[in-house]
Length: 122
Image (cartoon, rainbow, N blue to C red; front, side):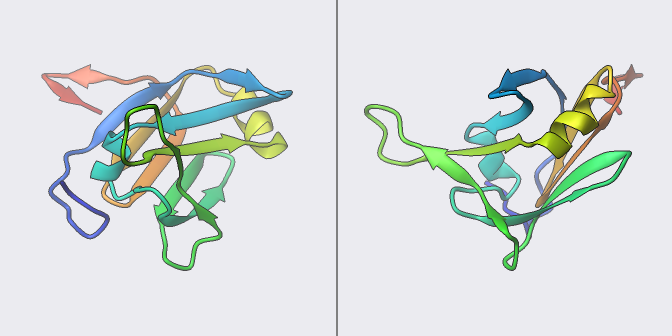
């Protein structure tokens, strides 16, 4: 599997579904595929938010870390990232459709639909 320094993982684009949690809108990523892009359990990362996008970047000096949970019968934690705050709620509430683009060591969340042109996703 690829990691943050390995650029062999293909770009993944997913639409984000808005879910409310304790009064805020939540952005939730979970699954083994996070590992493919370098976001493994307990990996540190940073979050930078602008009016146009939210960027999560693997960073050994980051102030956040990938959490996880163990399900019954599993030996390892499944990686998960949960972004839920007033700032995230205010940012995402203004957007109609939000997508996340995953590349090695980086997740970019921004407004827009997944567009397929001539077999290529953009």
